[in-house]
Amino acid sequence: MAMNAGTTIKLGECLRGKVAVVTGAARGIGRATAIAFAREGADIIGLDICASVDPRSGVEPSTPEDLEETGRLIGVTSRRWLGIKLDQRDLPGLRSTALRGEQEFGGIDILFANAGIQSFHPLLELEDPDWHITIDVNLTGTANAVRAFAPYIVKRGGGRIILTSSTQGQHGTKYGAAYSAGVVNMGFSNYHSLAFNVTRRYANGLTILSGYTFSKSIDNGSGVRTLGSDPLFPQNAYCLSCERGRSVFDQQHRFVTSVVYALPFGKGRPYLNRGLASRVIGGWDLNSIFTLATGFPLTVVPGSDRSQTSSGYDRTNATGISPTLDNPSPAEWFNIAAFALQPLGRYGNAGRNVAQGPGIFDWDFSTLKNFNFTEKRYLQFRFEVFNFLNHPNFGDPNLTLGNNRLDAGGVPIVGTGSFGTISNTRTGIDMRELQFSLKLIF
Figure 1 (cartoon, one colour):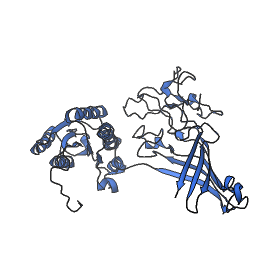
Figure 2: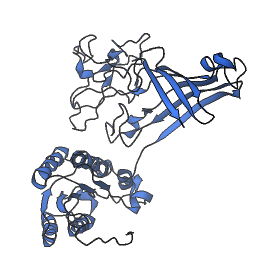
Figure 3: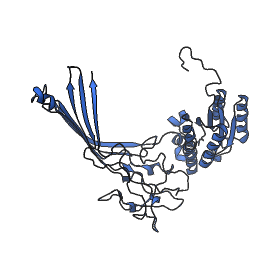
Figure 4: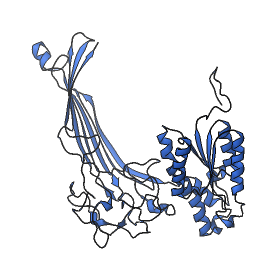
């Protein structure tokens, strides 16, 4: 531990007043961590399934007595303890525990997600049940713990979320294929582009920089945190290939040009460089930035838990019709007949990011003039216009299929709700804004 001169940290005070949740707390690393946190002053909520998850693994499971022993050891530190027998795949149970922790302990500050299992089989000998249960516990279970407890950490104004792994999970071993897959990221992405730019270097008061990019980015998840309509987790953790689609930040076409032009009038410039005309007409600079780009990909959702998994990341079914319209409008931005509600208990077969939002058409303009008092002191006048042409740049459409009435086939009916419609402009690009300012430089 690195400390500044004169800094002292007494044992038992580092985490005083904090509440820590530890999964897999009945023994091993989970128990050791819970005790360490308690010795530093934290109250502990310990979770463990206390049973065998996979009888074929050959590993002796933890027991309720093990969890009670952890509680006894926590009691020696005089810290509060709440031990709960719970499977971390049980999202409703985790959420109930989080609420109980807030009610009995006042909140939650730390999540130490340690629970996990190992399946000791080479990949080619691994049976489907072994693979599925390891992924379910180590990947989905850990994600569930974060989803359940993170909101309460946020309510406290911040804290710590610690997800444990191991050198085996990071580097892989002959018998650890399923384990490594469950504890190590499995994302992929690729990006291809054609880009060019044209530059006119500053000459005769004029400089121009223009750039165009034609690109495509594909991945199975565009970020650790949600971006736009991109889901935080896959619809089905057993089918990461089903998540393959355009990246949520993918813009297939983007053109930007900027122009700076010093008008040729006034002192130090070719024309009208003397007298009253120089002072009134001269010294003006013009600046312009023009942006033209296609829209970002969007994912359509049903608006309800159709898969009955409580995951919250269901997609809809695809009907086979293209979602692209020849003349989209805010009243119907994409073809809503391209999507249908899937039966209960089923995942949707529509892809991720298959719709596309509105593009960007924006021209910002400004002009400025310096009124010189001396060589180093002057007053600068600025006039700036954002979205100079007052062109509406629409926001993303409503993506929830369930907002419309459906026909017998589960296809939304046009005009019966907000699905596919746009009701706002894009954040950051409002309708025309004018701004005047004065700045004194001395």
